[in-house]
Figure 1 (cartoon, rainbow, N blue to C red):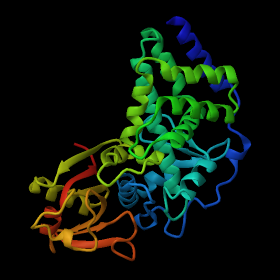
Figure 2 (cartoon, one colour):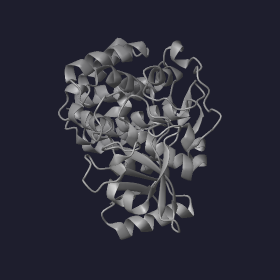
Figure 3 (tube, one colour):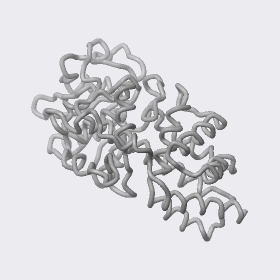
Figure 4 (cartoon, rainbow, N blue to C red):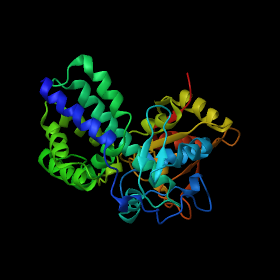
Length: 348
């Protein structure tokens, strides 16, 4: 057991002190970071993946707290970008990975900033998965786990390698095959300039009890940001995206109409990021499902609420459906009947 831990410590130390990513990964991104609309809902456009939960949440944050997102992104001294979340270490995102997501249609937003946030959020999920794997490991003595977790917070090279390895093998439903991931990770660690003996030891940790399962669970929860082509309604959880940047986020059911209207009034006051998800199928009394704006099991950004007119204005993260920008307004009763749940930022 201790011998295995010693190997893990050597791997982490080598990553901290060792080589950086290949030079090609440090090239400047082809797309500018921001476009004409800057950090705004209008700039956000979901790609071909079922990542409405992520894109609708980022658009909501862009409406409620644009400076929070803008300040989250900074230049990385070694190339690319650093993204800081409300808590935890910053994630380093390299231009090659941003371009990969854009050229594969993961994100079609104006400028590269949403794609940068998407990759950083994916790496954050991997970091959480690796942390869980370390905490659950029977191979690492309990008194040394805090030191290992501290070291994990200090470097990003491994996260980038894992991100690329997962993207290469993740299936349509967000699952992974352990053997395929090991092979892919070995390639990515080699490409990152990690010595072969160190890379071999790191790949071997995927065989440790519970290590792979903990990591696979994290990927499954946010499969779309890794390239899973899951259907509508199978995506990640919006409240976690909002929480990552705002610190606190909550979810509610639209069926509790009094609570829903109360949160809509908070949205009207400003500074609140809010999204809502539709039902998986239309009901006979659902007027929204008969419009061009309706998509089943889909997440929308809430832009505003007019208490006097009793109307809710929303935006489809596709940036279409309806054209030209996905923005539409519903009477409050139609909204309450057509949506199942909502997530929002705030404190209690």
